[in-house]
Amino acid sequence: MAKATKKRTTGKAPKTRSGQSRNKAGSARRASKQTSSRADTKQSRAVAMLRSTKGASIAVLMGATGWQQHSVRGFLAGVVRKRLGLKLESRMADGTRIYRIVGLSSDQSDPASVAKS
Image 1 (cartoon, rainbow, N blue to C red):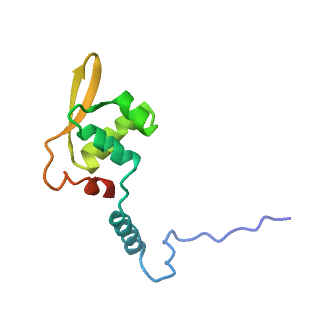
Image 2: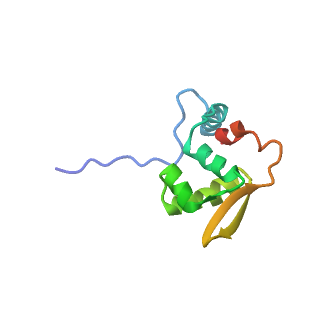
């Protein structure tokens, strides 16, 4: 028996059922995610620990979130610094690196704005 061959498509994206383009549908999904805020997430707990005057080490953040070390480092660089735009200070204390969020502006001091991101 010969294999049935499939007709190749041209690479155009299929149309959505509602008639919206993919970009409009994607932006609607992103907008709905931003309106809902959750207060007790791993991210909000980690940011709250980093906002304290003592700060937090990677080991402490690992224990509080259950993330691995490389995930905590990625969170600090990708979420805290880049996405949230917060200034992260790092210092050594007793041979342990401590991270702390410093220099909050008025729009970033609201904990609900952190949970939305």
